[in-house]
Length: 187
Image (cartoon, rainbow, N blue to C red; front, side):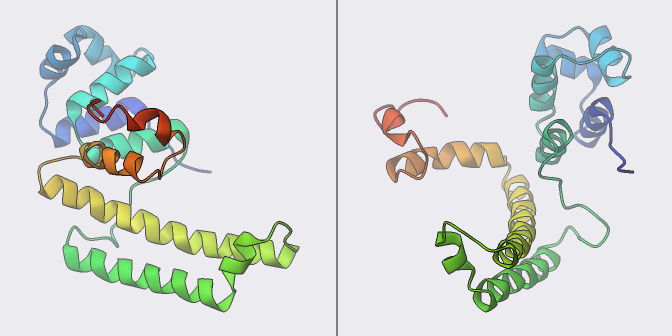
């Protein structure tokens, strides 16, 4: 059985962490304080648009990250007791995860398997195992990125928006041609 945390609890915890009152949330989101109270008490279901507005008002990457996980079932935050809030702990875990992923990549010739159209069951198993190692590395790095963004008084979302013109210019994204002419656009 998987324990899932409720969305209202995530939002309550995020507001508490950032020391934002229900009144302040109401003012920032233009949602009545009583309605905010009912949402956070889990008395009424929270419409998605208002949930997003509340999360934006809380302005905490971990809250948003965990909210996305709760709603979409993806990308949990690495915040267990084994992960400490220090650069050294993250650096050590990142190095370990990166080494595991690279070793598996080389030993099992994953690059050639990724370019193959047809894979045997054994090859699919190798690719899946490598994918899990890569996922560990990516999530660890994402945790570090979130801590770095917080330390530099920004958010991962703001960093992505700042880099978006480069992603478009270098055609890293599908449909980049459509957006290339609109670099003055606010991301």
